[in-house]
Amino acid sequence: MKIAITGKGGVGKTTLAGTLARLMARDGMDVLAIDADPDMNLASALGIDNPPGPLTEYKELIDERAGGPDGMFRMNPKVDDVVERFGAVGPDGVRMLVMGTVERGGSGCMCPASSFLRALLRHVVLRESSVVIMDMEAGIEHLGRGTTKGIDLMIVVVEPGSRSIETAERIKRLGTELGIGKFAAVINKVREEDIGIVESRLKELGIPVLGMLPYDISMVEADLAGRSPVEAGGAAVDRIEGIKDRLLLF
Image (tube, rainbow, N blue to C red):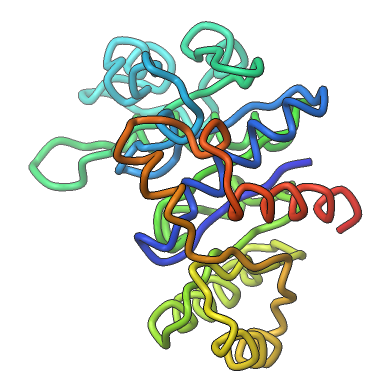
């Protein structure tokens, strides 16, 4: 199962990604968690104190595999050893990889780095036998057809509010154009009185609701203490446990 988790910035997608990864690993699954968000906070949600370095910082590796800044870059660089060499193993045996950020400003050509990361995403989506959970950056414009082919489900994390739902609509439209076939939503920090309105808007977009998470002070306390949510427990983690079980049937 290959899952991409996205949504507007700050809606809680990293918390969902990290908690799902831990809970699936506790069920005996081999899980690879990929931090593809420039904020790079997934390690904290997983409970990894010493995360692996971002791949984009390995300049020599990128130049060797994808072509140096002064030459022709390769569209299909070798990436099949990257997870083992540059990943880390965290609690419950979850493996983790950090993609890093491709700087787009300045005069240098960043094509080799982009080519390298895209090839790696293609590899983990199409060839990895593990459960793959990707914490994406807000939106999906950075993805291409080659990187989304093979994603089984894109989960959009939504908060009550028009901007968050508008982002979900854009993600659904772009994702469909890229060939993603299944979408679902998780509504976060929702009050009982808001559930019907948000569900109705998502239904209009053709995005089924996979689950709803309440505002949970345990999540805030865990973040402030530098602990992963799954270790703190609480109502939201219990709900994510239910979402995990429904994913296996989705």
